[in-house]
Length: 436
Image 1 (cartoon, one colour):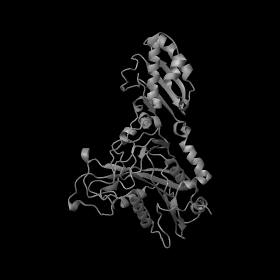
Image 2 (tube, helix red, strand yellow):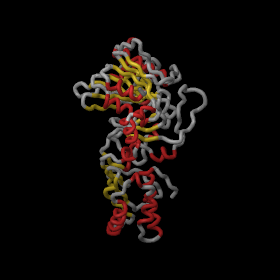
Image 3 (cartoon, helix red, strand yellow):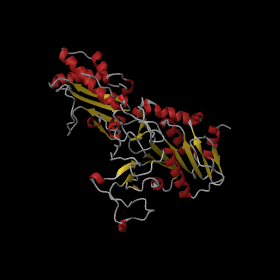
Image 4 (cartoon, helix red, strand yellow):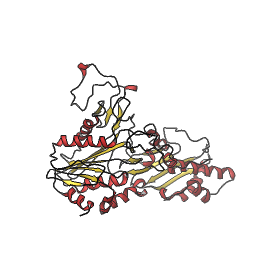
């Protein structure tokens, strides 16, 4: 029996607990394995799934990628770094690509790289409420490395950065909501090391997060996740809540590898559920064995699980531009939004106005004008709308080229303004910066 077939049999079996570790570093593969576990696992079982991804950005299912991601930066891609598994030696090399993926759960946008450990717990759903108690489980594992870790009111995992409190103020060591370290505002604001996202469907709940162990991209994360388009967009999509972040590893802590943190989380899971591991080995990155006893199934997974049709099709789906950009949500883009005055490039035509309505990645209507005269502007808007209406953004190479080749009125000045408006749209929606 192949490893993929054995995995399918174990997942659907009534074995109460499962522990799986992925050797794949492909975000699409790992999220598709997670989705398969969520959909196909026995409703009474509880599963732990751990994985590490190459550099990528993962947005929530209810988010707008244009609002969340700096497309110009991920296309240009300076300094997107891989962490070595050992976190020592020469600086990591620059990667060629940062993939952007929309996951199937809620929550905000996160940045993954090889210095992060991702955890996912799938469990029986009680009272149709996702229980975030597994964040406390992960804190117990992280405290083996950094005692400053705790769970906050949003179910995120944070580090308290302040000095040690008086011993009389120390909490119970088992209290995962408090630490013996001070926190406050400014320099003492807690540093986020893992967010929490969840979903519920039928009898199953899912809770997952990303632990920043030793990300070499820490100083760049906010740049990747700061979209220049955001001030010009109006959307009802769920926005991310930016927080100051930190790595679990610091100068005064041990320096575990991602493999070591994974093993600590596995041990915390086993202790939490008091799992009998008799005659059962813990999953190791060095092999792809799958094993089980009557209480638990455990093993290491890899890309060979793409042999399973559901995982293969799920992987293809979430890597598609349609899945990322053409969700059925409407938003507007305006060069001059109401009650706000975000800065425009100094080359943007002073009298130009741009307003697009976009739904499912399709421009459903537009109002673009160059003239300050209302009657001329109205005529210009009709011309622009005739070109842009029903245009699929992901099929567009360049707004500048489309508008420049399709619209011609006025003299050289007006034609130059058309190119400049197109160049601005290329920057905002396509991540293309052009010298103007």
